[in-house]
Amino acid sequence: MARERDEAFEMLAVACLIDWRSPTPNQRGQLNAALVQIREASPDLSPHELAEVIEYNARAYRAVYEGMPVTPTALASHWGSVTAEYEKRRQPSTTYVVQDSDHCLTCNGDGLVLAGTRPVTGGVPGHDHFFEEYKPCPDCNQEAGIIAFDYMQRMKRIHGAAPPPPPPKEFQEFMAGLKGT
Image (cartoon, rainbow, N blue to C red; front, side, top):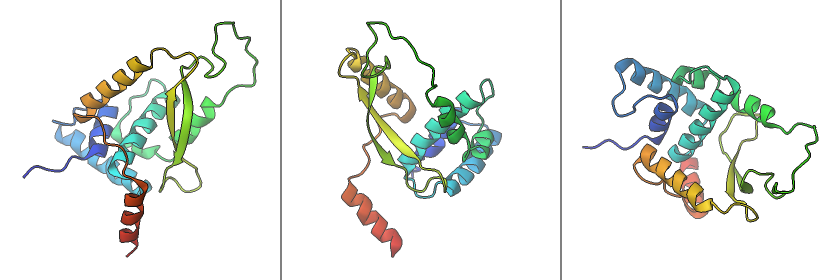
């Protein structure tokens, strides 16, 4: 009988540059031990949401601890603090930049604009966490198709297929009701 895919395990392995299909016994032990801690810190996340948060936290870890390797143990150890430090460093500076005439004022040259946010349930107590959803800038991003294609290719490499969309709100409410009984 085939085992059910564990997206969080796979994403943690990928984030730590470990082949999740054939880790060494030591790597598997580190991945499993780290996932226990991460799941305890984020109990209300679905497996898909947890995989997304792991990917984000690994990116944050790389930015905050530049040059340090991302390991399962390191990511689990800094789980509650790395995103706050990363966000603090990402805050815009108060310096004024003179923009050239070709610079897009809508997206500040990023090519993407924030389309919306949705809260992460079960995050670290005392910290507000949100998933940010972006879309191509309507004023300057003529290459949106390339960005979307690259994203889908990456998801196919990581997951074998594009991830499914989150379940509808009605289903989430139904499942929350089952957990409460």
